[in-house]
Amino acid sequence: MIETQLTHMPHMTLEEITEAVQGTYYGDECYLQQSVSNVVIDSRQVIEGSLFVAIPGERVDGHTFIKATMEQGALCALSEQLIEGATKPYILVKDSVKALQALARHYRASMDVKVIGITGSVGKTSTKEIIASVMSQSFQVLKTEGNFNNEIGLPLTIFNLRPEHQVAVLEMGISAFGEMEVLSRIAKPDICVFTNIGVAHIEHLLTRDGILKEKTDMMVHMPSDGCIVLNGDDERLATVTPFNGVHPTVYGLKHESDFWANEIKELGLEGVSATFHTPKSSFHATIPIPGLHMVYNALAAIAVAYACGMEDVAIQQGLETVQTIKGRNNLIKTELYAIIDDCYNANPASMKASLSVLAQVDGRCVAILGDMAELGDDWVAMHEEVGESAAELGIDLLICVGETATHIRSGAMNSANPHSMDILYYPSKETFILDYKNTIQEGDTILVKASNFMGFAEIVTVLSNEIKE
Image (cartoon, rainbow, N blue to C red; front, side):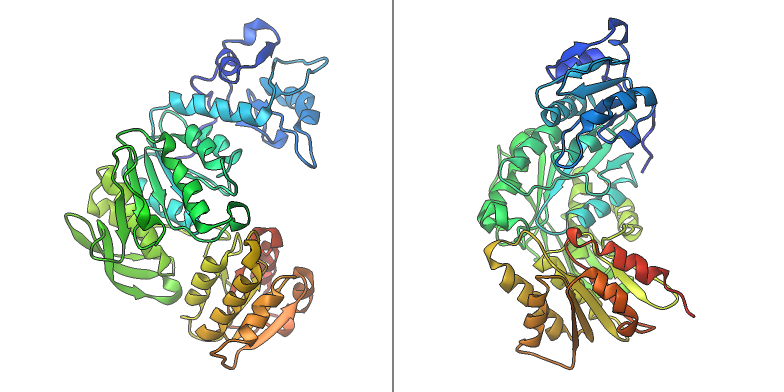
């Protein structure tokens, strides 16, 4: 893996940019052949030579920062408004977001890079991380950072491509109909990876079949010699048929899959091991991230690596050296606790998977669970299912935080398989933080998980910073 270089972007002169976004150039023509150094939407990220894209938001309008970015060294701005007294060139466009996307399409088309697109209801980020780890054993890799996976984030990721990159591993997330086609047209993925079809964003996509249709639109702009990699154990993905003559490569735990695994051994917080089978070989690997789902993620990575001509030794090295990232099943060991920081996002499937990991640990296990968003009409039952799962797995202490987390509590209390689990409820993150020292004990292993809007990263920070008195 290599760091993005802060050099000027190839194929991105102001003349090219104006043509790509179908805008109107305002400014001295002497700048037209100059290239920008990067593309940003945040004025705080402007460096010498930046292209600043002014996006009107609900709370902040980027247009108010245009003149300041020019003073900071920006070479040019994309604007939906005429700029009085501009000291640098600007390009007038009808829609800044659409212009950003058009420019990303132009830039991606100019770069000789193999793009791996990843989508699914659960596990996109962990699959992206393990694919990037494997691919980086043989290639110079760019990967999606943070949550830059949507209609604005994906273009910004594309703009980090430089000539030295050989592979781009791009997470592609959607929440409504029509969004995946936009992302696919920007990324033009050579390899399309599908992890599963669950209920995330079902509030907007209505049914799991609707989610399947939207997710698989990633293939619409795949080249004719592309590759489709999908989880054959997922009942919806198993129905995917060849697309434009490209037959899916299937992974899963079944012997019939093209890539499959057995002899799986969960090692608690130390990870999971398995024997992996390819069409021509078998090898053993230990993945240092816990959870059965990591076996599926590893199988996806192996299938992608095979499509790119990699050998087993390099693949195994990539699997065994993958690292967790903040908020994503990240294990933090402090003087007092072992914290499983999985607070970036949540849905019923990922909640249950994380609880399953927690239940394997020795000693007292504590789950701090919060509200889940965008679950549609069945949101009450889905929260209750999580509580039932916590009870059935034998979690010692369940702490429910948030308005809809009351239904996690009721699900646990009404479980058909109750045990001596303690259950606490707090209406907000703040009320829990004020009281946590009365509930958490030294030596606890603590899972922290909720949808991102709950801000549970603050709970992780508070617990991480506590020291022995």
